[in-house]
Image 1 (cartoon, rainbow, N blue to C red):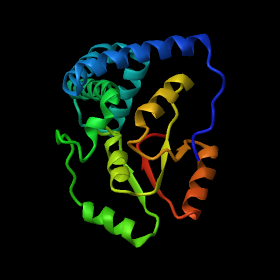
Image 2 (tube, rainbow, N blue to C red):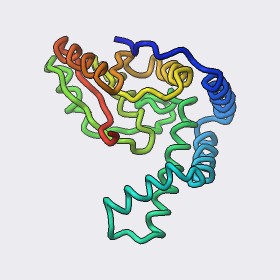
Image 3 (cartoon, one colour):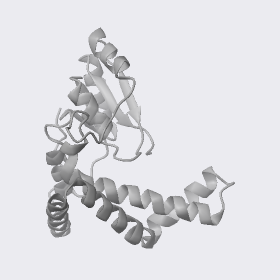
Length: 204
């Protein structure tokens, strides 16, 4: 159940993918900590200037949490951009964010529940949100030996999407259910086959 192919890439897609690969090569050379720091700086410096996206975040935060001041909303929006930049930079180092990595960047509590679910042989649904590096949940499930289907949103650029899947390869499930009607069929097939699901539930 690998993700089906998308439409043929355009010239713009190829240009964006080339920039993505150059950035990934730079982040790889920097190591995980410096790459994350640089990604965070880029995110909180450039992100707030992307007015359409930042304005939407501002409106959503103000609507959901009307008690926040303008300064607090701006601070949270900058922190969101910082986290996004860090996570993007960390894709070059996903191996370092495994639970069993010797540098110990990731710890987990409650693993007995996950292991109990695996031992039961019954499918389960694991949910999280886009907090910190949101790929960590999936790497932990994979490392613990769970057979699961990963629900995800494709990148708009098919070449970038393919690169993300290469970075994930060997660290998390390659059973993918893209968002939408197509993915709903994959999800039902996975559950009928006794597979679990992993998904992030804070997007439309």
